[in-house]
Amino acid sequence: MQKQAKPALEPAEQQAATKSLMWILMLGILAPIFDTTITNVAIDTLVREFNTSVSTVQWVMTGYLLSFAMVIPLTGWAVERFGGRKMWLFSLGLFLLGSVLCSMAWNVESLIIFRTLQGIGGGLLMPIMQTLAVRAYGGQDMGKRMATIAMPALLGPILGPVLGGLIVNHLSWRWIFFVNIPLCVAAIIVAWKGLPKEEHTARTLRLDVPGLLLLSPAIVLILYGLGEVSSRHGFGHAAVLAPVIAGVALLTVFVIHAFRKGDEALIDVTLFRVRSLIVSSSLLFLSGLTTYGAMLLLPLYLQQVRGESVLMSGLLLVPQGIGMLLTRSLAGKLTDQIGSRPVVLVGTVLTILGTWPLTQLGADTSYYFLSAVLIVRGAGLGAVFLPVMASAYIGLSSKQIPHASSTTRIMQQIGGAFGVSVIAIILQNKLNSVLTPDPAAMAVAFDHTFMWTIAFSALALIPAAFLPRIRK
Image 1 (cartoon, rainbow, N blue to C red):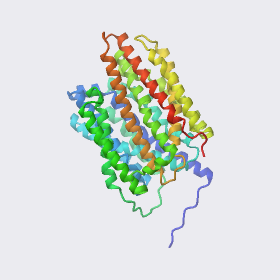
Image 2 (cartoon, rainbow, N blue to C red):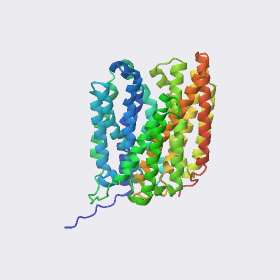
Image 3 (cartoon, rainbow, N blue to C red):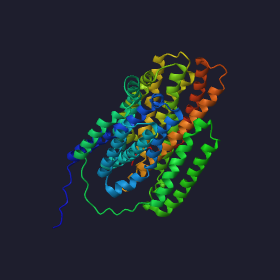
Image 4 (cartoon, rainbow, N blue to C red):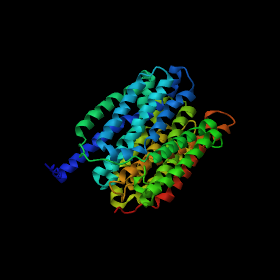
C-alpha cells in the first residue's frame, strides 16, 4: 500500500514548529559556546594541576580547535546523507561523551585526547545548526532569524569568562567540563522529543573522499601554522611557514578538484559565483582581524597593565556583550527591510568609533569610561555580524545551504586564527620596544596595537559596499 503524504502544516502551525526548532537548536549550541571561553581562562590552573608547561597545556585548546575545524567540511554531506535530526543528536552525544571523559582525565595527555574528541562534536554542531535554521525559514526574514540563532554566540563572550573565572577561583578544574553535562543531556532530551523526524529516503549521496583528504588537512595545517605565530615571534619561522604553505597548497588542489566535481564535491565551490556569499565570506574572514584580535587585546590589557584577575577581566568585558545584544534585534529587522549593505556599513563605522578611544587607554583609565566605550563597540559589532551571516544565504537553494554553512564556518575559523596571530605579533613587537616595563609604557603598546584593529575595520568597508542593498 502506498504511503500517504503528510498534510501540509497551516501557517500558524508552521510558525510555531519553526519557533520550537529555534529554541531546541539554541539550547544545543550553548555548551560548545560556553566551553571555549570557560576553558581559555583556565590555562594557568591546568598548568599547576598537571605540573606541566604552558606550551603543553596549550594543546588542550589547540587539539580542540584543530578537530573542531577538521570536521566542518563533513557536515554538508553528513546532513544530506543521514538527515539533520540524526546528525544533531549524534553531534550532541559526541560532545557529551567528550565532556565526561575530559572531566575524568588523569593527566594532561589524556585531557588533550578527550578534548580532541569533544572538538569533533562541537565542530559538527555549529554548521548543522545554521543549516537546519536556514532551511526551516526557507530563506525568509533571514535578518530576524539570524538575530535569534545568534543569541548563544552573543551570550558566550558575556557569561563564559565570568563563569570560567568563578570555577577557576572556587571549584576544581573538573567543573570546567562538568558544567557541559547537564546542558548536553537537556539538549539531547529536548531534541529527541522536539526535532521532527524526517521522511525516510534512499540517501545514496557519496562522500567525496578525495575532497575530504585534501580540505580537512588543509584547514588543520593552516590553523596550526597560524597558531604558532605568537610562540615563534613572527610569520617567518619554518614552524609557521611550512604548515601554512602546505595547507594553502592542499587548499588550491581541493579547489581545482571541487570545480571538476561541481555540486558533488565535498563543498561546492561554484557557489562563490554568488556575489552575496563571496562578499559575506570575505567579511567573515576580516572579522578575525577586528573582532577576535580585540578579544585578545582587551583581557591582556586588563591583566597585564591593570593587574586584574581573570574573573574581574571577564566582568569588565560584559559591557561589550551588552552592546551586541542591544543592536541584535534592530540589525536583523533592518537587514530584512533595507538590505545588509547599509546596516553593515553603519555598524562598521560604529565599531571604528567605539575602538578609537581604546587607542588612548592609559594605566589608570576610568572603568566607567571603558565600559561606555565597549558598549558602543559592541553595538557596532552586533550590527555587522548578523547581516553578514544573513547575506551568505541569499539566493541559495535548499541543496546549497549546507555547503554555504560549511563555507562560512571555515572562513570564520581561519579568519579568527589569522586575526589573533597578526594582532598577537603586532602587540609582541610593540611590547618588545618598551624601554621601561611599567604599566604606563605597556599601555602605549596596547594603544598602538588597537590602531591596527581600526585600520583592519576600515578595510572591511570595501567588501561591505558590495553587499546587497535590498533583499530579493
